[in-house]
Length: 113
Image (cartoon, rainbow, N blue to C red; front, side):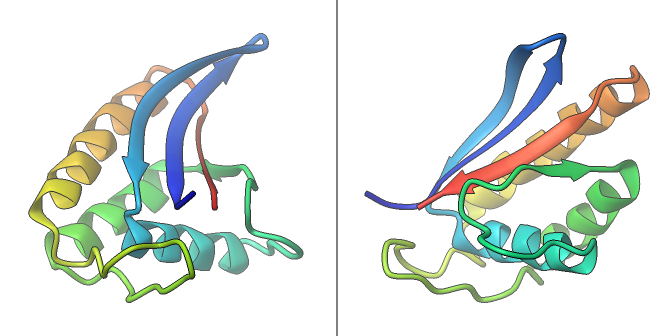
């Protein structure tokens, strides 16, 4: 059990994975806040969130500045805000997701815990 996160594209029923994270709670907190800002309601767990280029630019800045929110949960593990490995994985994801958006694909994020 724990926090498992995935980013992917979907096209004609086919899912292509971009990045997976394990217990990057600060990223999940940021994504949940974005979901709420976009009008999300109900249960966050296993919800699909579509990301735009603007979302990725904001995430990049927050990640580079070590400014993701502190996020706690029963199965979330330790605070991941200053984890360099998670930071690099997230910046790699942003680069790849931005490229895919420029190609006209849709990018999604989901997490389950």
